[in-house]
Length: 171
Ligand code: MG
Image (cartoon, rainbow, N blue to C red; front, top):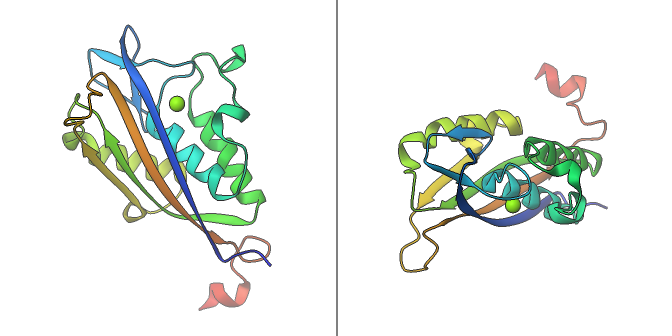
C-alpha cells in the first residue's frame, strides 16, 4: 500500500548575469541582473520541481530536462513544474503544502514576497496559506552573486479516482 504522505526536498542555485531578466517563482522581477542558466534560470521553480519529483522518487529536473538538450534553452520553467505536477498526480498524490527559503543579496524579496507567494500558490493550485516563502541574505557564505532556493513539499495520497466522493461532497 502507498504511504499516506510523502515529503520532498529541492535545492537549486543560479548565478546572476547581466543581460537576462530575473525570473523568480514564475514572475519577472525588476533588477539590473537576472539568473543565468540554460532555461530561464528560475531558481525557486526549479527547487519546487525537484522537491515534487523527489517526493515520488522520480528522476530529477536535470535528468528529465538535460541542459545539453537544445529544446530547453531559454525555456519557461513552468514547463518543468507542470511535468512534475503531472507525475505527482499520476503517482496518486496531491500537493498539500510547500515551504521555501530564498537566499540572495539583491533585489530585496521582502516587499515582493506576497506577490511571489500568491503567484506560486496559483501555479501550484493550493491555498495561499499552504505556501511559505522566506527571504534571507547570504551573510558570511560568499554567495553574493548567486540566488539559492531550498524547498520542502508535503504530498498526500489522493482518494481513489482523485475526486471527493459524492457523499463527502454533500457534507
Ligand atoms: Mg536550476
